[in-house]
Image (cartoon, rainbow, N blue to C red):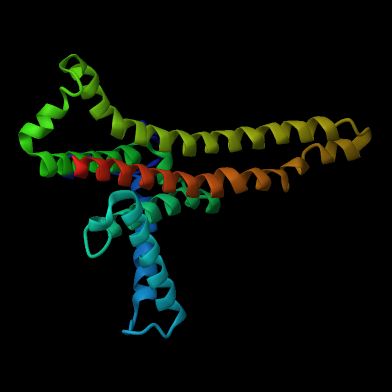
Length: 251
């Protein structure tokens, strides 16, 4: 098995196309996107003016919640009929499901730093676009010299540190959860072997081979690391995206 620089398995390499590498991250991300598209098609199938099905009620509820979140954090002008509500909904659902995919044994794409850096780069482009749109070229350049010109180097660093901090924050929390879970499994296996081997005779030798302590205990930690943390990091990433873009649009 070969790994890329971020730990994902390389599933296929195509030399004829310039050495394009297809990793586990790419495949799993496409699987998650296919699931999201399928859910969207299912929830929006045969929609009517007045909701009469549970599917349409759920779909309208999600849309209203996303619009309200956009309006509260970015301003009312971004709330309805624009580009940002579907963008935020897509990022949040993709981030959450990519992280939760580890619960069914898949390699979580959010454990690959390249995934988060790609999302952060997109957010950086949107932030820069809104700064140009609200203040123009001169206003954008002027912002680097505020409040005093001597802060120019720090403002430049801050500009590029914003997307990097978003990516590393998300990556660090998801990757650390995977590492802690793996260490927990190993520690419980060692503890189980050590305790059960104290039983004398063949019975102790047999039971020592069974990692009994791995049953149940990791599930408790999984509720936080795999479920709560995954949803929380998706929410935080989207909140930061909305706050940065909204602030840039205000000039």
